[in-house]
Image (cartoon, rainbow, N blue to C red; front, side):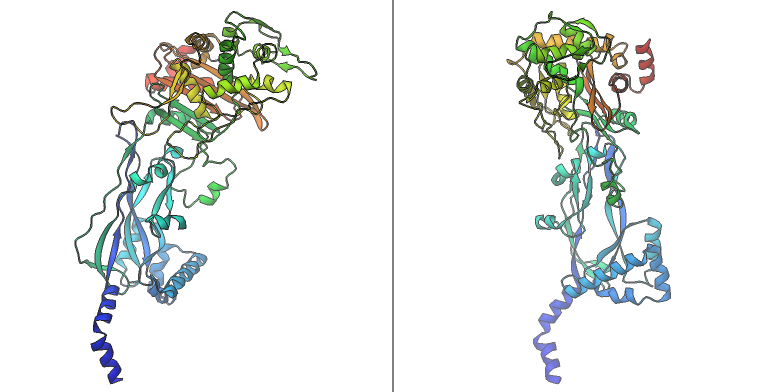
Length: 558
């Protein structure tokens, strides 16, 4: 024994001294606060940080949790563990202790306790010295634009290979995910002396300072965003407002949505909700466009010489084709009478477009060609993840296929964001810009998404634009007009197999020098003229009158 003691204390002194120091002195990670996400003016934080308190225990102290005295149990009860949760914590700590890899490193057993509980535990730490309270920055969301901002979550196994460690947070959706490298900041480190319970006694070396994440400014106009969210409250759908001059998204709301502050605790409930609140319907929802697709059909018919602007067809409310058992109907059962292209768009006459498809040979492949020119069936490339591309049939197998497609029905699917690009093409007389959610650097130029120059004549575009102005002046969208800002647009009522029609409106204002384009989609909302168009009017009024939408609506109705 004397020889063995001498060996351990003399020969092995360096080794055991180093082991002792390794237990006493440890590197401590300093997690920086994430960058703040602001509105377009850089004034209002939409996602920032606050201090959260976590409860930690080193696995080597699991026995102390298993054998608490009465006073320690009273302290521990402040954590509100259920018996099941308590047993799960013990099992995890036992497993980590057996691994011996991180037995002395405190691990989180309870996240984000309230400040009063944290203060109580700190005051009574002498009764439970194994309990360690650690402060950390916590993400705080301000309740707007949930689908755009996204959320953060604990890292997964695949993230551990990319410089993250257990208990780190990472952006999982929206801007939080796409701009993770920009927002997360740089870790800091310090060496600290700890006691047997893992509590920090003092700092030993100068700290390597943690660098906070860099902030980003979105393109969102917060007042317009809140208006869009209020209009959709209690409904299912999407609203987009975009500046057609540069593609900046001024508002983008999708309902139902979620509260990112409580997402982690309600993940199973939200993830299994049949209403799919995590789905961003503005970029990921795919719908039949209904009559708003007539803009593209009219472009194809005029450009291919199938009609000119004076060509007329008679509408008696029904249209028959050979070997078809039932007529294709117009929304006006007694018909519109004789219609040219201008009035057919203003009145949204289905029979006129049935004639284009069936008698003037505006085929499925022709409509497909022009749909692609307008940017359909491909992603816009917005700097958000998960965007869908929709689908546009290229070949029609039956005579009824082109009849259905010419009024935006059948197998045709688009996203609201794609239709925002379509209406921006009309607003800009042939061009739309790639939509973006982050402010363009000063002096930067917007990226062109669709350019019809050399493909579609300005004459054709102006015929359709003038008709869109007529829609809100004397057609079905008068509630989308303003008393001193001429708007233009098109409604749509898209049939679907899951209930009432989807309600659409796409439009822009002012007519001569457009500053804003709006897309409204309400799932199962009914007629576009009755639901979507009035909502668009309120969005336009919010933009131009800054909150005096009611006055604008009353004046427009008079």
